[in-house]
Structure formats: structure tokens, C-alpha cells
Image 1 (spheres, rainbow, N blue to C red):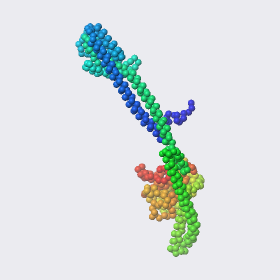
Image 2 (tube, one colour; image 1 turned 135 degrees about the horizontal axis):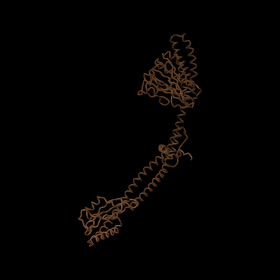
Image 3 (cartoon, rainbow, N blue to C red; image 1 turned 120 degrees about the horizontal axis):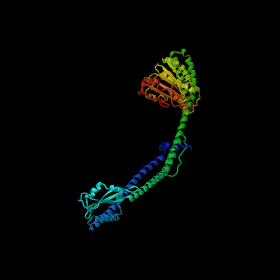
Image 4 (cartoon, rainbow, N blue to C red; image 1 turned 180 degrees about the vertical axis):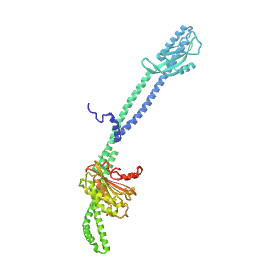
Length: 545
């Protein structure tokens, strides 16, 4: 037996229907139209069926009452004209009356029952009935009405039992007076089988017509909606291509209707957008070239100033105190200016999208050890103790070591700068897909409003705070770009009075994608202090930890 396809398996149908409902405007429109049309047709069909059934019943009832009245009058006339005096004559007379009733009323179901409460008579015949299996259909209420009202007709809807099935019917009752014998109840039963068959035929016809009409409405709706949805689908696909960067794509323009107007408006918007994007790209390129050119042009005079400043700085001991101090300030600011130019060049490369990684297998623990060693003297001057914890980070990752070293130097330097002389913890850990490094300080920390701007260019949490490591305000912005170009995350957690924690997470391979980080954020010690109700949001690239 051939294997069933996904579409032919019934258990997949609900999922497919839900998917089609969410994704297809045409399917949704046709389904709604068919559903409401079917509901309307059902209501109309039920109303028509009930109305036709009532009309058939009322018509048959009028005919039955007329036949019964005619048959009763004929029988009473026969009784009135008779001179029967003994039991045999009365019995024969009653038999003739039943035959006349059956002939006149076209019904063979006739019952003649003596009205109770009369004086006993030897000539009064016994009750007789041709109802057969339906003898018990005459209800007590109907008998009471007939017995108490001479000269009137009363009827009751009943179910008659035939030879093969039960059919609906009507029993009509009235009183007759038999000579010598007294008053009798006359009941004539009429079958409604023909009316029921007519109603069933009408209902079947309405049902078939309703189903055919629903299918026709669905087909017509599908065709009409297709004419409307197809241009919309083309517009949606074109907008997706436009959003993905294909600025040359356009919607075909046909006719003069509203869809054509939409296409012309969309194409005009795309032309305007393409023009503005081209202008912005040209402007961005000019700005990037300007920054790059200015940075390069400044390097020549800066190098000259740097050489002259180094000479003055080396001979500062021979200068008067004020001049020596000026030489030291000149040397410091020239170094900072040179660092700022380097950072501006790096930012311009990122803005221009011209950054190329020089990846190689690298151990982050070794990079962290090198960064800690290079900044240990600064940490000692601040009174901070640098500690490295690396339980599972001694596995290589394909990264650009120069850029990652710059990120580590920046994060550890900032932790020393803002750590208030408290320990700085550097943690490295790894798993099968990623390696992570976290730098944790226990300094002043930042508020959530400050954390939201921590990666902004040239932003400082406390502008009045004196820098001791010559920062330019671009370090964290460049660090985030370095993490992003590695398909990594650079995230931050901070809380006033409890310090900050920056976490760098990198995939092990150059094309790897991150799903989680080996290190927690907020850090474990902060989580223990905060508890479940004190969770602080994590900002930066990647999902919240």
C-alpha cells in the first residue's frame, strides 16, 4: 500500500484548516461567505418547510372536517328516515350507516361508541370500530368534548398504526342519534400519509436546492475573491521583496480600477523610497568618507604633535614646574586624541559595513588572563582585586582575537573604573555551542534609565566623573559591534548599589547561532539577593536570561 501523504491523513486536517484560515485571505473569505449563506439558506428552508407543512395540514384539516360533516349528516339523515323498532333492524340500520359514512368520507376507519350514562336498552347495538390496531388513538379529552356537545365537531391529531408503519392522522368526532337505541359517538379517522409524503418531497427538494445553492455561492465567491485577492497577493509579495532590499521590484499596472490605482500609488511610493534610500546611502557614504578622510588627514599632524610632545614629556624634569605640568597634560591629551581617532575610524568601518573578521581558534581564558595582567596595575591603584573564574572555558572558539581582546580590555577597564575599589570578577564558561565571558563589579551600579543608554555613542552615566583610563565614550558601542559581527551577544545587568555585570556570549563556530548562554544573567549572586520578586531586566543583544 502506498504511503499516505501528509495531506491525505485525516488527523492532519484540523491543523491544515487552522493554517489555511490564518494564512489565506481567500480561504477565510470563502469560508465566512459559505457559512453565513448556508445559515441564511437553512433559516429560510426551515421557515418554508414549516409554512408548507402548516398549509398542507390546514388544507387537509379543512377537507377532513368537511368530509366528516357531510358523512355525519348523511348518516343522521338515514337514521331520521328509518322506522326500525327492534334490535335486528337497528343493527342493520347502523351497518348501513357505517357503509354510507365510509363511502361519503372516503375513510374506512369508523368507530361508533354508545354515549355512556344513558338508560340501558335491549335494542341498542354494541360499540363497533374498524380502527384495527389504532383503536386506542381516541383520547379521553376528545371523547369528553364529543359526549358533552351534541351537534358539534371536534378533532384531534393522532398517530395511526398501519400494516407496515405508523402514519400521522386526524380523528374527527361528533354525536349521532340512533332511533330507539339513543345517542352514539361517531369517530372518523383520516390518514395524512399523502400530505406527509408531499411535505417530505418538498423538504428533500429544498435540501438539495440549498446544498446546490451553497456550493454555487462558494464557487462564485471563490472566483470573485480570487480576482480581488490575486492583486493583493502580488502587492504583498512585492512589498516583501521591497522590504528585503530589492528596490527595483514593482507591481504590474493594469486597467483603471481601484487595484490599478493601488499599484500606481505603491509603485510611486517605491520610487520615492528608492530615491530617498539612494540619497541617504550617498549621504552616509559621504559622511563615512569624510570621517575616514578627516581621521587619516589628522594622523599626520597628530604624529608630528605626538613626537614633539614626547620630546617635551621626556625633558619635563628640566622644565619649571608649570611647564613640566603642561608637558604632562599635552602628552595625556595627545594620547587620548590618538585613541579617539582610532575609535572613530573603527566606528566608520562598522557604519560602512567594511569590517572583515580574521577568525582563528582562540581560547577566551587566555585572552582574559592577558587583559587582566595588562590592567592589574590599574586595579591595584584603585584598590580592586581582579579574580578569574573559569570552570569550563578552556575550549577554543573561532573568533577574531584582536577584537575580542579589545572588548575584554574595555569591559574590565570599565569595571575597575566604576568598581569603587571592590573586587572585580571575570568568569568564563562554555557549553557545546557557545562560550561566554562575564565581568562583574560591585560598585555603584546604574538605574534602568541609565542602562538603556549604556551602549550609546559618547554617553556617560556620570559626565562629572573623572576618567582614569582615558576613555573616549565609544568603547561599549564598539564592543557591541564587535560582538554582533561575531553573531554574539553583549548584554548588561545593573542595579544601583549592587554593581553591574556585562556578559559576552559567542558561538563556537563562525557561522554558529546562539540559543542560550553558559553564564547566567543576572549573575547568580544578584539572583540570590533579589529573589523571585526582584528580577531586573537584562538589556543588550540576545534574549533575556
